[in-house]
Image (cartoon, rainbow, N blue to C red; front, top):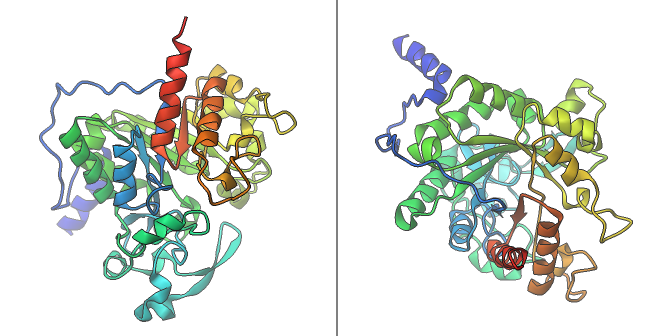
Length: 384
């Protein structure tokens, strides 16, 4: 009973640094640690340097840090025992070797996730120990990134703890602060299945001095209710000094899953209007829109009012996703029609176009290219 009460008190005080984990890497708090100054325009390693290594692996995150990312971006899902691991989706048949493992053949299922029927293997049906045995990451889009398949089956699925420890180790080695830009995937789905991720995420961040005091943190979601919960918790507990909130915006005709579940008729287009952005500013520090919100479909050279509207209410704008392959570039920037071929020159032009439009950061699969584009843009912007 005493242990149960202690655990409850710990959960209530999760942002005050309570720790019941024997593997806490927290160093003694250093009140003299200078506050981190965020760059005016940030580069977010989208799922790591995922154009160059299989996404959401420690190798991809390390490559992103080596290549100049200001942030690395883990997407989090939960195992059945509540461990937060990095995968783009909770269905992992397409990003791991799990379909080849005989011991897990009977775990294949069909499920409805946020209104979409999927068949495969789902993280919530496995303990972390099971996933950590023989399950290894694979390239998610080999048709575009054949070179990444050479790394198939080499890397484990990392936990949030391991990602924080990697960033902290990189900081200790290089002195560079790299932030974490964390997305909770399908939060309403996991909440309904008794695996809510929010408190576990906050508790993990509060456990490490690196994420508590040194590194900038962004918490992002395509849903709304969990972001408001994060804002409430961050307001009540002050130990996560550098944590901010980002509202992601999907296709204009789509709707947040929690809106659909609650009967709220608004879609992402409603959220992206000036009035919607004003509402977002009441709980978030910025927005992560699809690139299509920035430039008009009818005129490739004309920006919409989105950046201006967001900045008017104090929101940062971090659009997604900048990828170097022809198949992901607009017709205006492609080198040719070979979709899987890298087009560095086109990617650089696209990035500079968005920097010139006034964005505050970008999600990119190739941080080295983004750093090159940003350096060139800043140099040109300072010329008399």
